Image (cartoon, rainbow, N blue to C red; front, side):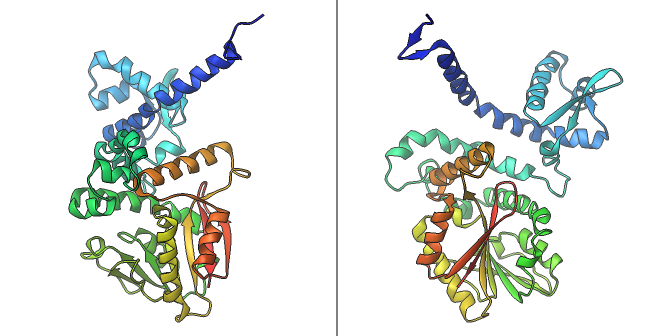
Amino acid sequence: MASSINGRNASEIFQGQTLLYKHLFAHVDSKCLKCIVELGIPDIIHNHGQPITLPELASILQIPPAKVSQVQSLMRYLAHNGFFERVTIHEKEAYALTAASELLVKSSELSLAPMVEYILDTTISGSFHQLKKWVHEEDLTLFEISLGSHLWDFLNRNPAYNKSFNEAMASDSQMLNLALRDCKLVFEGLESIVDVGGGTGATAKIICEAFPDLKCIVFDRPQVVENLSGSNNLTYVGGDMFKSIPKACAVLFKMILHNWSDEDCRKILENCKEAISSKSKTGKVIVIDVVINEKKDEHEITRLKLLMDLNMACLLNGKERREEDWKKLFVEAGFQSYKISPLTGYLSLIEIYP
């Protein structure tokens, strides 16, 4: 008879150990991403024009001979996890870019390298060492515990981090180029739109290019937009979305509402209703955000959404929401109806009507 401990057989215990160790060393995954972005390895392979062998990579990086085998371990691990593809060229093993590592090429139009650099900065990511303290603090976020202030105050006081944050958000916005090609009907017929929390205008510029007759307003903190120049159909306005939102036919939020509590979101949405109600009878609010759907989503998509929910809860007192959570917010803010459509792998597009 197989031995057991606490009613579990050896196989179950070893599976538990494997899961435990997988998460115990999971922090190494993000550090590996940070490393290859800092070394510029995706750029090197891209500029090489074809898959690159380890000796070629070591030569370009000027890696000490004694370190080459260790770098091979790095590349082999990342290849196993889908960031590089191991191929054979002239009977030699070489590494090619995958869809994931192509997003880390800094010169690429769709580069997410700035997101990696911001998120994995030691000051930002180090906040998670305070999780135990965060659990026992009634209202404080991880950032307030580790940085001494809310994220937005920290960014206002630290121009370098503010620049890094805006570059990260702008890089993420470029991904919308792909998504918006299939949902142009959402913006057709609108005369004006205000992008709330629009940063440096990456998303608004994409919309302006697709709809040159649509007037776009980027609305963000004064410190973000004060030195930015607009164009014929793009303007920048500084302000506070909790006080008021510029008038427009539509109001856009890209990954903004998940930063805030339900109470804060209700206030923001109420201001949206005021902004669009007198401007257009067909006005609406457009939300690009996460909708958790554990019953329909693939396991890994749900894992990402729940991970982002935890991230928002810890860092900003925000949250990712299920459809019933979103609906409750819309109704309490005075909206009559809404429609949810898929947008990207993990994001949805929500249209809310007054």
